[in-house]
Amino acid sequence: MNRKLVSNALTGIDEELIADALDFRVDEGSRAPERKKNMANHGSEKRRASRRLVSLALAACLLLALAVTAYALNLFGLRELYANPNRGEMPAEAQALIEEQEGFAQGEGFSCRVLESYCDENNVILTLSVTAEAGYVLADSSEDPFTELQSIGLAGEGTLEEYAMGQGRKLIFVGAALPWEDLGLRSEGMHTEYLSDGELILYLEASKSVSAPVIETVCRITAQIVEPGNLDPEYDPAAIQRLEIPLTMRESEGSEIGVYLPEEPEAIPGLRLGELSLRRTPLGLTLRLTGTPTDRAALGTLLTLRVEGLEFHGSGRMGVQPDGSFQADFEQGQGEIGDSLSVSFLDWDKQPVGTVTFVRKK
Image 1 (spheres, rainbow, N blue to C red):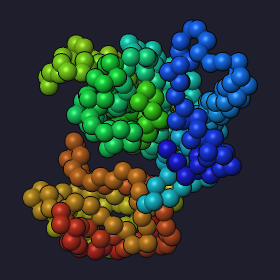
Image 2: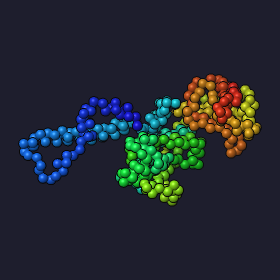
Image 3: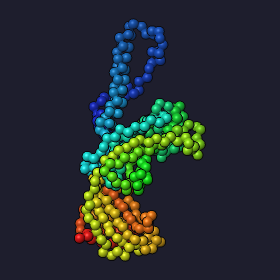
Image 4: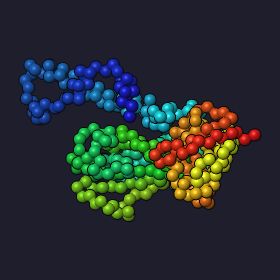
């Protein structure tokens, strides 16, 4: 959560009143049903009670304002969670193509809703809201009972297990994924924003190869309930909840920029280079390079490639395909494109193996 934005939105609230509300405790004497004070003090007690009621109301309003402001500012929206220091903000063209979703699933101890989606010929991005019922502490499926609270941004000290035991609640670990085979996924990642110990936002970003004007698929949800203090490192697969949320997305189209040919096809050991094609999607440039392996051992020393003047911030991969050909795919690129491209191939130590110039095909 962007706490600075929330703080700025809530400036102007009297800090003394907030502190009074948050520190307020009921007097011991006020718990007794019979009157303990004489009538002479009634007026001052009434004024103090009124101030406390105002403070409590302010505290309630503050908590409500925190939640309302967060959603009003859309701090957990798809476009905000997409942005990071490396690739910057989501391009405006892609922002305009974000779709609101309404898919919902109810499991034991939790519910899950798909909030927003973005889809183009190469990428799918989703945000989902997960809410736990009373009696559960919520975490994403990449964590475990021994995860430190502070490491996932929750207040307090100790582990999730210790926290749940102290609260008298169960742990529930929830994850989400898209179907790999149905969409031809090449990669998929999940990021989590914790709103509280009972609510979180899941951000999914995947690279796909299946393309269609309308994508009909599902988002698969898994959940595991764990009893604190009775942990078994070998979880029973039968105890894992598996749900599916139907998902419909309209795919935005890309456009071809150009096809480039290598000046020296044999310049890289172990590989005969073929065509390099560039396309443009709302998220940026996509690159595909094809080739033919000539020496598998030499080819195995290559890790990645870099194109002078371009930066790719999506998923990137290169290697031998099931049919025996070589293919490299890189996405979400930014930079200037000319009639020639200088492509460097790097080994596993990220040292250059060779550089090849590709010229635009006439």
